[in-house]
Image (tube, rainbow, N blue to C red; front, top):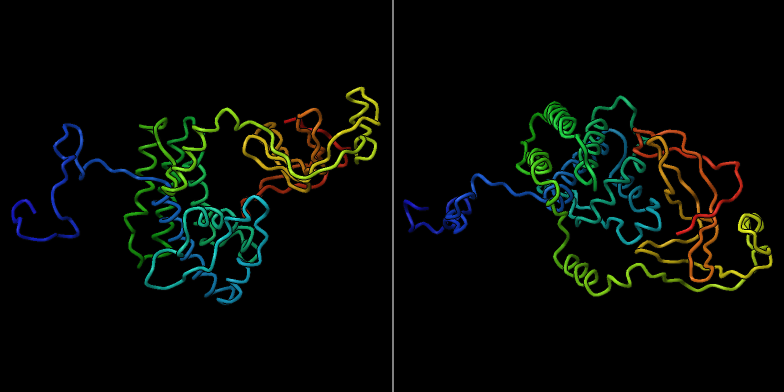
Length: 323
């Protein structure tokens, strides 16, 4: 373009970038990536589409594939993020989803289709490798994990080329490597890019309501005595208050931006690197303070094949979590 300025463009390049005049920047040397475009709308959808094509070829019909995804219970927290109809057009490298829908589908694919494949299926291994890489990239805190991330990326790319030798390694796939480098060099400054409108709304909300963000919002409820609440008598004894004490039993409550309601499973704490889960039985408020009456769950193991924790109901009595 510099040599022949009469050309309108060459390979979509129309002119030299003004930023190239900066001392420490050049568009051909400084590579910028972001998790929304390059992972959620790029690598993730690209590899999920290849996986779905494999499943259609070996395990399910196209109708069964769509039926499983549309009828799956994504849970209360993901009710607005569930993927819409997928685009499996051969000419496209994505599924036609936005970043939030892609993130929701990616996390639930092992539960939706894990029963169809065996633990020795190499296509499934590729998905699990992608999971490990994405989990590190999205992690809010990292410490001395970059060597491990590098080996995961190498293993992932080798397996990809083995399974899909005729597929070109898209530029967006190579961006995973740049994530590793930028995580290491600019860990404190990496921004998890959101859709522009959502990002602006979030910024405005944070600035204007930061003082009230921690407030407690509650849904409809009714005043009941503790002895009318399942497990309330035990709480009354522990708190040394009469079992006839009045509390407000809510249908739901929102605190610090998180919504709590009966039957929802939450992670209460982590012990010995294993999360401990609790299922909410009742949502109560006492003198403006949120209390969750929960049933402890026992975490048996992390099932890598389904990328999920296996839990069972505890025999212990109810316990209260204070927020």
